[in-house]
Image (tube, one colour):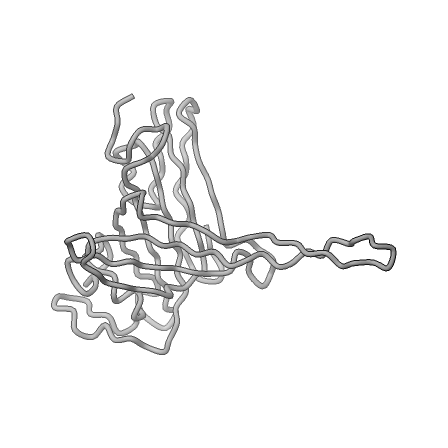
Length: 216
């Protein structure tokens, strides 16, 4: 198969498509959606450990004690052209996502993306695929034995970090999202899904995100 911009099917070593859905139930629209691409080498997904401990017994035995599932953190890098994104679509900048959505501008110039006390939930979707039509993190992967893809989703998380630096010789941002792996109703917030190259079925696009209700 041809090596696409995502890299070969065996490694997905080049780049990935990312979609960020940010909620604000008091705003209209309630969801702001932006799309961007990141180098795979800059993406880091960690956490969600299902740790255990032990309770010692008088007979020197041990009982396993299960702890809660850990938090999940997603970090990736990109190159910002602006302070934020004036509307939905391709992201020109991401400061407004970190600063919080309600006071963002709806047209250029971006001047009111202030750091607020309000915190809004978000969903991050990351897709690796050799399907040229799958251009966003939430795109479907076309059916047919020539297409494959793997997608990661973290729902109901928060943007907790936004840093800017010039260490690569270009103005670069690092964006960090963090959230619980399981919600208060014991429903998972983390999902991996994929379709293999030899499978003829499609990988469907996830449902439209609604914070606290529709995750995937």
